[in-house]
Structures are given as C-alpha cells and as structure tokens.
Length: 73
Image (cartoon, rainbow, N blue to C red; front, side, top):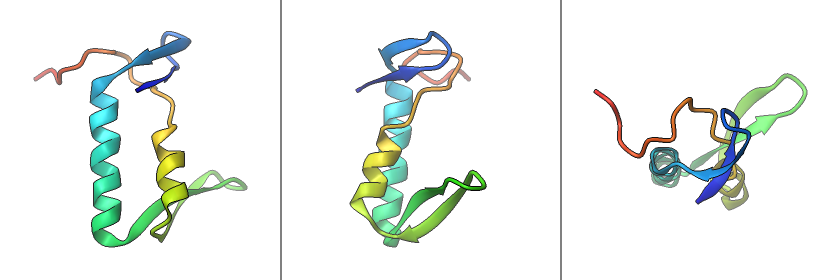
C-alpha cells in the first residue's frame, strides 16, 4: 500500500513496512488486544481488540530510511 514516506516526503510503497504492520495486526488478533494512542502524553495504549485501532495502525507513516523491499543482513 502507498503510505507517506517521511524520508522522501512523498507517498510510496514499502513492502517491508506492509509486512511488519500485517504481522503486528495478526498478533493483536491472536491476543484479543490492539494498540491505540493517547494524545495528551504521546504514549501508546493497549486496549481490547478494536478494528478501528488496526485501521489507524495501518495508516502509519513510513519513517524508515530505506524503501528497499528486502531486509539487509
């Protein structure tokens, strides 16, 4: 999916970020929990499973310094 890339200041695809977020969402579903955000102090909040939280998480910006689709070793 295309998402805003903070390094390049434009929208682009990054398969590595997509795969990571998919795995995080799968773990959330396995445990019946989801990640939210508390705006006053900037902390993350772990809540009961909520599909809206997964949508919010999947809308994350890409702050990686690379857009390579494979992990370097």
